[in-house]
Every structure is written in C-alpha cells, then in structure tokens.
Amino acid sequence: MRVLVSGSTGFIGGALVAALGTAGHEPVRLVRRPGSGTEPEVRWDPAAGTIDQQQLAAVGHLDAVVHLAGEGLAERRWTEAQKARILASRVDGTRLLASSMAELASPPAVFLSGSAIGYYGDRADERLTEQSEPGLGFAAEVVQAWESSTAPLGDETLVAHLRTGIVLDAAGGSLAEQVRFFRLGLGGRIGRGHQWVSWISLADHVAAMLWLLNHPVSGAVNLTAPEPVTNREFTRTLGSVLRRPTLVPTPTIALSAKLGRELTRELLLSSAHVSPMVLEREGFVFEHTRLEDALVATLRG
Image (cartoon, rainbow, N blue to C red; front, side, top):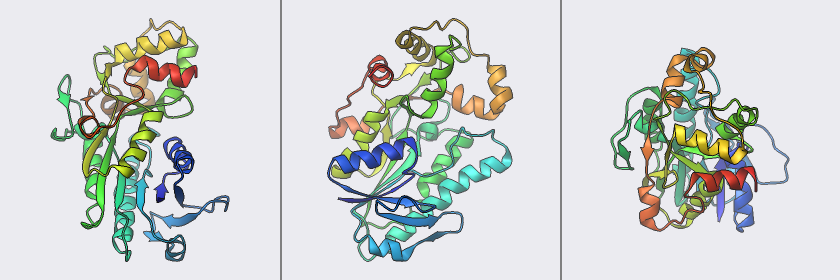
C-alpha cells in the first residue's frame, strides 16, 4: 500500500512512517522543504496553497493518505495571531490536501485526517463517544472547522477523523515535558485534579492508524485508550512509575502566567472522559488499556 503522510517529521508521524515501512507498505512523505532524498516525497506549501504536481504524479497511485500536519495547539500562548495560525494551519492545509486528492484521476481509497478530542470541550464527568455533540471554546471550534475541511473529498474516498487524546511517549509530546519535572520531584496534580485525561500510548495510536488503513471506517474515530483517568490519578501513576513524589500541586496561576488563561483552561483544566467506541466496536485490540502499563512500556521499556 502506498501511503502519503503529512506531518511525517513529528513524533507521531515519524513513528507512523517507520511502522508503515516495517509492515511492508510504501510511505510517501508530504514535506515543506527537501528531505534526504532517500525516500519518496512530495513538496507542498500549505500557506501558499500549492502541491508539487509533478512529484505527485511521479510517485504513482496513492492507496491512502494520513494527514497529521498542523500548528501545535500548546506550542505558544494563544494570542489572536497565534489562534489565527492554528486555525489556518489546520483548515487551509486540510482543504488543500483534500482538494488535491479529489482531483486525482484515481483518488485514494482512504483518507485519515488528524483531529482531536478538543472537539468535545470541557464536559466534566460526562461519558463521551463519537456520537456526542461538540463542546464550546476555541479548541472545539478549531476541530469542527478542521474536520469540515475534508469536504472536497468525494464518495470514492472513505474519510476518518482521528480524534486523538494525549499521546504518551517518552520521546515527545506532553509526556516528555512532564517527565523532566517529575524526575526532579516537582510533578503534581493540576488544579483540583478532578478533570478527566483521555490518553493513548504512541504504540496504540500508530497501530490504530495502520489498522484503519486495512479496516476502513468513515466519520469520527476516537483515538483514546479504553480507560481514561483523572489528572490526580495520572499524576499519582506517573510519579509511581518514575519513583518520585507528587505531593505539591502545580499552581494554576503559574501555568496561566506562562501559557495564558485561555490555553490553560481549555487544554490543562478541561475534562473529557472519552471512549473509543468505534475502534472497540470494529474489533481493534489495544496493547495498553491501563495507564501504568503504557507508562512503564515507554519509560522503562
């Protein structure tokens, strides 16, 4: 299977490209600047709205696309300019890629489009599935617009929106940042710690994407483990795995000062108890259903 992958230099995209090769597939990187030249790639410029058509034609028929590119939600404070960049990077890039694939003489059969559980907003203890209504706030608005941007794809292509939770891996994402503080004994719950954390191991995230390439599902797909935990429980478990104390709560005032009140409220203090109903219904088997097992695998494995 020949698979076009955007965001292939990120820690999720990089793991996916490696897994595709191991599984005997042919990954094609969608890149903004020239790579090593040792792997098939296609240049694009989402801001300019261009994809190199000659390179696209040269790689031949694409069986599938996995679109993971986009400005990180938590990389910078949410100034109005940054919020505009976040929205544009997801909407414009997705619409460009979807339109380009739809215009091919033989469009790909599957299009897995990155998304996020931010779609659900802050929902306290409500149990959330792919059938739940969208929430409120900037993140929820971005995700709704992001998912709508695949509209140019026609009936020839099955589109799945990967509503991803917190992806756990020692080499990247939020866990890599947290571990630095926890190892120093500075880790602690955020706020009251009652907010639900819907997580997934990187291994399961990549495995689920590979599985969806061969078991096409359309619509929203929650990429979260079956057993979400509260922030308090997440903190306790991470401290236990690292053998470090977690007695001092992380002051929300310090987080707000560094990241801004809106980002802190929506990404760190919001609660989303998300269930992977579609994956479980369709028969996907998780390797890591318990948080402790996932943390031990990546931090001690």
